[in-house]
Amino acid sequence: MNTFLHFDLQLLKFVNLQLADPVFTRIMLIITDKHNWYPFIAVAVVLLLFAGRKLPHPGNKFVRINPRVFVFGLILCIALTDQAGTFLKHNVKRTRPNRDEIISVQLDCRLQTGGRRSFPSNHAANSAGLAVFSSLVYPPVVLPAMLFTFLVGFSRVYLAVHYPSDVLAGWLAGSLSGLLIWFILRKRLRRPGISGFANMFRFHQHQATGSPGEMWAEKSWKSLDGFEVKGYLLKGSEQLVIFAHGLGGSFLSRIELGEKLKELNGTSFLLVPMRGSDGHPSRLATGGVDEVHDILGALRFAEEAGYKSGNTVVYGTSMGGSSAVKACSLAGELVPAGIVVHGSYSSFFLAARRRTGRVGRTILRLFMPGWAMRSLERFKPVFWLSYLSRGCGVEYIYGDGDRVSPPEEGELMAGYTGSEVCGVTVLAGQGHPTGRNASENDLVIALNNSLNRIWNRKKVNVNEYIQAGK
Image 1 (tube, rainbow, N blue to C red):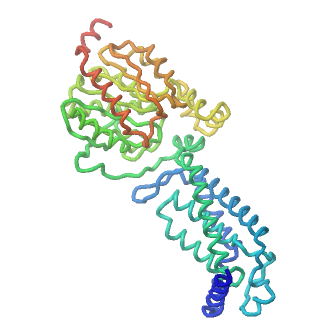
Image 2 (image 1 turned 120 degrees about the vertical axis):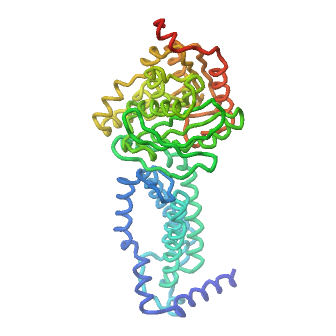
């Protein structure tokens, strides 16, 4: 132990005395003073809270996260590392080198401190906690975050207010704290939150973009109300699945799902961007109300591309499924062979109450624009199910762990469906459909079975039903 303490002191002397420089000293004094960082932190927090949900934008590498949860995580990191450091200081009772009567005369003490306790360095611990947590949330910031942590810790040794071992212990404690906070909040970080949902009706929600791969061909078409959209088609057999994503989702989230379905039965797969997401020129989502035009435009494109309506199925998740019900009820001659409704809601605000509680739903309504709230109050997918042609079969898929749209929603909606095919599949251990559970094997099998039930039933001439008034 004496050897270690001797080495610790010698390293402190080397950094404090041998690297001394007047300009360097002024820089270290600026870095080590936490008050100098407050303006930068305040600006960063404001930007995150008011613009964080717009990240990422095309070209950057950030993953979309909930900025409010991120800021909350930073606060937790500071609280945890600070309390842990204070606890250790009072129990280890190591004196700071600049307050030690024997050691201080051997050093150039350029900074006076109020506290006498040295082990560990709270500056090092706090900076490491923030850096590790931020790097796990936003991996591209890892290098500047680590550089910030190093400079803060180095400044404490250079100014002789901590031994090197104090800083190393602080870095270790802070890193563990940052890792722990990230582990606790990692799922909530990707949830938009109440204000995040409300912002989807106010601001364009940028997403990570890119090409799905060589097998996918970029296609463009117009929505029924005239917007020029760009999607991707995976060519396979004459049978086609049209994918409509949910609120805040991405049409690129089902790339792997489309490829797996093609491996199973050769199915073609069309990725359709819905309004409010990248790939669609309409910047604001409407929660399923106007997305109907996007699905109808995709159905028309499918027919023009050579896919017969009797070989086409619309697969919609969450909002996309609810919107697909109305779209196919209004499709006329474009009505597909069927719809697979996955985790969709019968009422937007009922789903919001399940997700956030009564208080959360009330707050959501206060944050939402008036036009969006009024439109969604009138939007009832179950109403349109009763008008759906019998030539269009409907299958429902729900997860037994879905608290937003539980399996009872599928049973409720099935009661309004007058089609020939109507099955409800409940996936064990699955929650609400998102990009993260988009291609799990249980879902692929369930979706493939639903598609086969629709395609393998007796072919129905839709026009005959319309003429017969059925």
